[in-house]
Image (cartoon, rainbow, N blue to C red; front, side):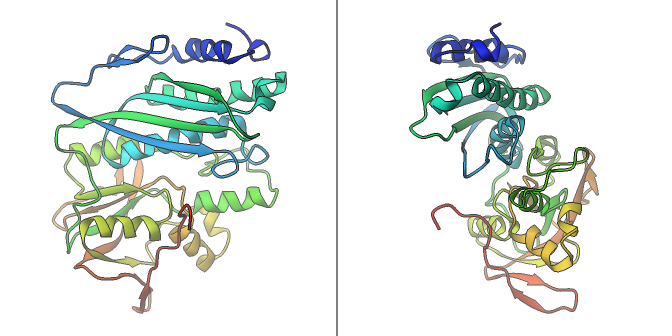
Length: 331
């Protein structure tokens, strides 16, 4: 296999990707990289779910803040988190990559690309997701553009959706909130991330096992991932379900990186920060919800109400409107 310093031109890059991607195999993939199309065979009785996500340099990562491994990991994690939100099992990934000439033209740049694939393929191997195809092109600017498409499967007609919440349901979240936004703040201030411990911004963990368990055990009535912040993502869920909600401030699980900023600042990071890639879901009040699923904490944080505003309830019982203030493109 050619080393990164010897990858010159699009065909050499494609061949390098093909050789590296062959390490992850799946019985669902009949034909992968090398032909004009990939060939997949979904399990009997399953629907195929498809999601696609851009990862844009300067918007979703920066080369001076994120390592190449982090950029590659995040590219795949964004799509895997969408599958997790619907309880799906990953089937295959497709990556379209627009590479700046400055990266392709130097040995250092080609080494950066190789490390980008180190991060992406390590996460793919962890979740047994084969890279089944994609496209490459020269980027029109000096910024790298990556578009990941993920295919997954779920039992026919049983995928988790945003539209299933009903008044009286309880509202839950997995893991902890605000860590990704807090780590991004540190990176923007030039602070080096700690060498040990979780890195929710650099290496977010898609909750695939949890999402599949919610579907398989019929625990959730509605579900989505927390990519743009609780305030914005809950608004999407409530709009899809035609309901309102009350979020309790006190039990919100704050990530330790967010908690370092003080209680109120941490609360704001948790509500509006985004990129936590945890699961936000609802369940009937009659359901006995585990405190942990696949080792991931599950915390009740509110309740669903009849159609109306979304409110944040403080510990003293006072309530205030919780307006969507997370990330939104083109706003």
